[in-house]
Image (cartoon, rainbow, N blue to C red; front, side, top):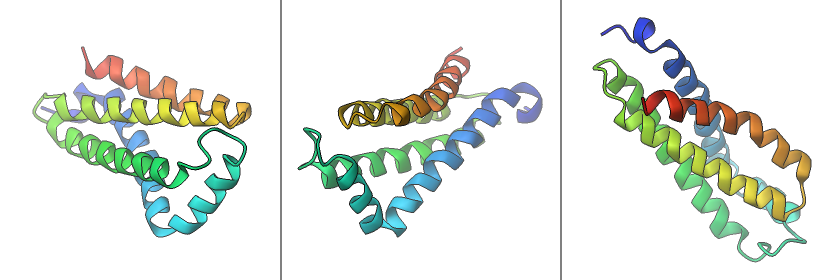
Length: 131
């Protein structure tokens, strides 16, 4: 099955999300202290201020798992199966919802608004992959 002919939109969405989440996870791994410092400052006045390291680790783990699932999902699409790609995109959507909750609690409404673009793309991916 030719993935470029049969699943061009799904493939592009998966590539977009893999780049987004894999780079984000890689950045957290390679600059954990810098990310932690920034996020602690960002959440200094929120109810989450004492949980930042744990929450950042949870986000990192979900981002990496989602990226792995989506990457394998691209291979799986070559056989016409969408299972791993769909689970990966669903995990990406979950990550975005968790980030949105954090942005709203930190009262970073502009940051929360920027997540909408990623979420719309992700939900469209869920829609296409669940058909």
